[in-house]
Structure formats: structure tokens, C-alpha cells
Length: 495
Image (cartoon, rainbow, N blue to C red; front, side, top):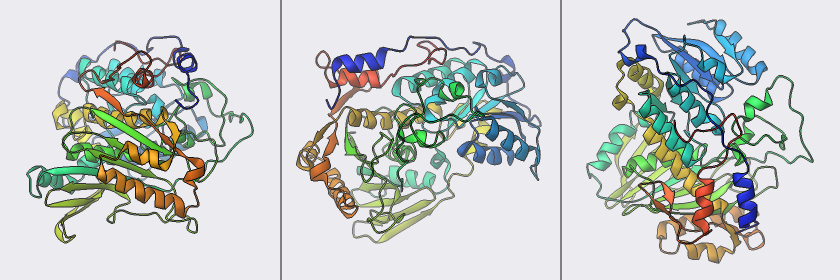
């Protein structure tokens, strides 16, 4: 393995001592009953920069919802969002403010929480919230690794909580009838699904040493379950996506939406039995360590998912114009016997094998997803959720599988990378297109090489990689699938 020995891997992965969750282990008996139609649902938003700020607006528009609390370790952002909420033209609200999520979860005047923190916090807060008797809307991906996603699912079930995943495509008015159209066999059996994430992601820069933490940020609370190390990038916020310690790269940021669509299309209820992934971080040298160009195969039978991530533009001479495949930049191509669908959020079209339009499926982007959650909170019917925690776990874990294969990769040639996927012609075609994209961005693959991960087999019942010998690739994969935690911010073994 590239720069990875058994000793170093074990030292890095197992150094953190085990701990226990600190949230109170209680449920609210009042929430076992159906809420009255005139009772307001009291909501707290946790993590209010970026997507969390959008959730403040979205939930504030829903009738019968009051935002009663905001939480963020950045006190400057917290004060700003609280002020704007208090001055809201339609539904002003003076919300309580918290920097420590544990204190918020102790608040018995909160019925439900919305989690829009960095990825490494998602599952732990979900588990703590379920233990505290609160319902949860958790942003994608619902987990930072496979293990904690399993624990979040277990917590939702044990404490009988309503838990929605933020993959709003599941509520799209165009995609819902599309999936039924495909599942009813109108264009034949699915041959494969091509998941595309062509999003421009520029360099995050490179620093010469540790960066200062602004005084208005509680870095301990921001770091939470992750290793408490110095800030080694220019921006604390958002650029955490491109560091495996806290994020999952673009496959776990934007790409999880497309993986979710692909899993929906093939009606996946378990993880893929095999996975392989390769690529690299091309086009710049910066402080990110996640792949910005990645080809992967989730080897479902009979219809595999081919996943593709690109961060570089169409060519070196343009800044933000991206390539497309069959007109799709961010979305899926569902290839069937008698045609294909091309589209994504907001819908798309079904074509015959000659490229003629068969049927249009215009969508709305899933704008009712938050209301779907609130409706389920009122009815206590989790089966009415469009994207329950189990569906969110499958889609997130598929992204983790891809990243784990990639992280365990070694540098190889273009030819060796091609040889790895030679039995999957659609993936080979996608890889050739990626090579052209890199060439047009002046990336010399002969010089830089390709980080090629191993094929890993998954036991789909236990959700653990199959180990064939002591300390083989699957051994290390299972360590990455669980991760380690910094006390007291520990995802518990038993929820």
C-alpha cells in the first residue's frame, strides 16, 4: 500500500481511546403520541453556516413550525443568524443560542433538530438527539464512516425517532414518477447506472504552517469527534470537505446525491458486494487530500453503479465550464435495455437507444422535503418519510466504500488502472473520457500516475469487508470503515 505499513496504520487508527456518548439516555413519552394539528413543532438548527442557513429559511416557511434554537461553535455566525431570524419579515423568532450542542440537546423545549454541521459530527449528534427524545433531520451524508451510520440507524430504531436524510431528490415531483416508470419496466431492465458529479472545485491553497483560530470559534467544539490538531489550511469553514479527517471529498458532498439516485434506481437495500475506486487530486498542489478526480465501480448484480467525480473544467483555458456526458453534468444516466434516462435534480428525460426523446419528467428539486419530515413528525409514521435514515445510511456507506478503496490505493500507470476495470466496459469508457479531461487541463498522467485502490468484497449482511488473510487490504478497510474518536465525543458501541 502507498506510504502505508501495518504498524503505521494501526498506530494512527487505534491511538484514540474509547469513550462513551455524553447525551442523556432518555426518551420523551409525550412524543410517542400524535401531535395535535394546532401544536407548533419546535425546531433547532445545529450548524448554521452554509446549508444550515438555508434550513433556517426553509423550516421557517413551514406552517406550524417555530425555530426556537440555533447552535454553532462560531459565535460570530451564531449572533448574525440569530439577529436575522429575529428580524424575519414573515415569521420573526427570538431563538435561544448555543455553542455546545450537548447543552441544546438538554433543552426539553425542543422537539426536533436539523443537523447541518461538518460531516464528522452528523451521526454522533443524530444518536445523541435520538437518546434525548428528539426527532432528526440530518444532512447528507448521514455519517462520516460506515460504522457510525449503522449506529445512527440503530438509535433511530431503538428510541422510535423520526429521522429524515437530507437527500431531497427523493421528494422531487419529477423523479418519483420517473423511478416508477423505470421500475415498471417501460424501457426494459436496467443494465447499469452512471453517476456523474462534474462540479468545479478549485484549489484551497497551501499553508506553510499552523493557522490561527479566530477567537470567536470554539475549536474544541468544532473539532468534536475528530483528532484535535492544528488548522493546516487557509479556511476552517467549508474546506473541511476536502480533508478525510472531517469530510468525504466531493463524492460525499455533492456525489452522495447522485449515488442516492443510482441506489434508488436499482432499488438497492444493501451495500454493494464489491467495490473499486481510483483517481487522484490533480491540477494543483494544495492542503486537500481527497480525490478531485475519481472513477469507481459499485459492483451490484446485474446492474452496477459507475461513479464519476470531476473537479477540473472542460479545459485549462476556461475557469468554470464543465464537461458533460449525454448532457448531464450532475446527475445520473440510467441505461436500460430499450433506452436510458439522463437527468438529476429537477428531473430529466427518457430517450430511446437512438437518442430520441420518449418522455419528459420535469421536477421541482425536492422542495417539499423538509415539510415531508415535519408531516412525519406530526403523524409519527416514519414509513411516510421519503428518505429515512436507513436509505441515507446505504447511500452514505456506498460513498465510504469508494473512498476506502481509493485511500488504500497505490500509484499505478494508466494502463494498470484500465486493466483493473477491464471487465466493465461502461467504466472503461468513462475512464477514457476522464483521461481526456485531464489532458485538456495539462495533467500528465504518465508523470503523476493514478492512485488505484484494491477490489474489496463486502459482506452485505454484516456490512464488513471480507478478510481473506491476516492484515490484507480488507483488514485495513474495516479499520477505515469504523474510524476513531476523541473523548468525550465518541460514537458509542451500544446506542
